Length: 199
Image: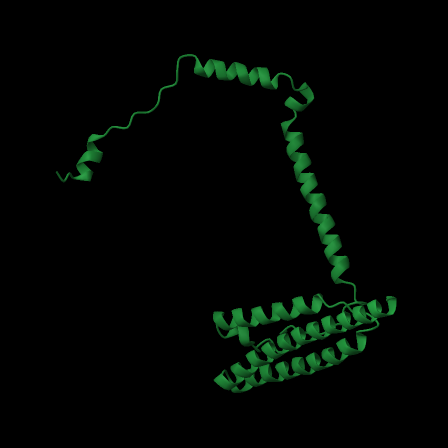
């Protein structure tokens, strides 16, 4: 009763389906009928349509670029804090990310999170003092990170320095999350006060 599947598959010859007679001719006439109604200016101008698409994409890209530039270059509403790990004047210095690809991923993860949180801050008259206090603490942590990075270059990579660098990045990100929570609390208090004044 058991059959060898390999033998069965070798014996089967697949048949390709045959089209009925005149199928191709009927299809061509249908195509001609459908597209003969188009004006000749559209039917013969395929390259211009593709140029229109390219132009539309280019205009969209330029618009998005200008919007992004204007949005992120607004220095009045966003406080400036240097959170990058730029190398000092000496080109021989290396950072945490230069040690291994895994540490580079960790460093990039935290730096991206920090930059995203900083970019999303909305500074108003009511919250400026609160944000300034947090920005000062972030600036201190950034200076400490630079010192740790110099230590990494002078002493060489060791577990305590690497851990301190990662903890510094983590602390900065946690500090920004705390700032976000404080800003939400402040906004909720203002809304409650506004609602109580109205009633």
